Amino acid sequence: MVAASDRLIDCHCLQRPIFPDKTTHAERNTFNMAKKIVLSGARPTGDVHLGNYFGALHNWVRLQDEYECHFFIADWHALTTGYADTENLKDYTVSLIADFLAVGLDPEKSVLFLQSQVPQHAELFLLFSMNTPLSWLERCPTYKDQINQLKERDLTTYGFLGYPCLQAADILAYKADFVPVGEDQLPHLELTREIARRFNYLYQKPVFPEPKPLLTEAKVLPGTDGRKMSKSYGNTISFADTPEIVQQKVMNMVTDPARLRKTDPGHPDVCSVYAFHKIFSPDEVATIRQNCEAGEIGCVACKKQCAAKVAAFHGPIHEKRTALLEDKPYLLSVINKGSAKAREVAEATLVEARAAVKIGL
Ligand code: TRP
Ligand code: SF4
Image (cartoon, rainbow, N blue to C red):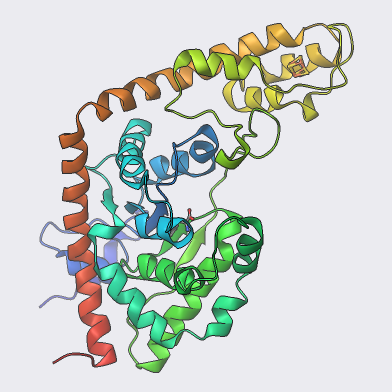
């Protein structure tokens, strides 16, 4: 057999070697010419809002062409903090599928799936939980933070402590090369890398690669009150909001508190409307700053301008998600197909993992 490397010799003038038609997928893999694997997840804990979109989803959409993407709804993760209140879990799961599709995630390009439909995540979580030292989990910075922040919930549970192990299983079941995450998730990804390394070392088999963070540019959109946009602050604009609500929310946004009259010079950098303009009106933002600082534009006019831009972006996505939610069988078929594909990929990894552990017959 002719080695694939021999066929590539004359391709150095090209950025990407061209493979003869008969090259098998496996051969391409050995040359890393196959697309790299990306994985990320979102919890079904509320309506997707503009903060989620600009923080994560909009990057996911852009990654779809360049990478072999796997995006999933992390419903087991939702249980780690929300085990006592599962009333809305199914509804949020369905509407998250609609939001995924409405913002442009494409089931033809990416594997879109539901975590609880892929039991391999749970099995790998079990294997990892056997050999992950408690101290790794206890020193995870989000662990104590969240216990203190979410005082109304009892988070002194086994599942909550072990959630980084579940996240490691999510990522490693697909042997992901890259995980697009925000900075707050970096410690969890580091833990995933440690868990992978420990498994490979303990069983002396290089089953798991160490995934890297994909720190894509995240645009920060504040909430309507200037704090971080978050469901718990009640300052969100979500794709579920009607255009009328969106208009109202923008018109009620917090501006520069020192500005009482139109002629007062404004301070755009402390104004949440200005932060919106930076994202939604990139071409006009310099003029808006000038006019604001010179006291030549009133906040009401400025907000109206902002509301129109937000509406132009939000409206079509809102309409699409509303239409999708009317066709629940379609949404379920998308997620069922994606989950079947995910099970195939994850099962192949589990075959290797079980063999490495020497569990079963
Ligand atoms: N922990 C993430 C969150 O709270 C969701 C998540 C679960 C995830 N598993 C993941 C993200 C794996 C990236 C990779 O939003
Ligand atoms: Fe904010 Fe616009 Fe008012 Fe300036 S004019 S403070 S940017 S709303």
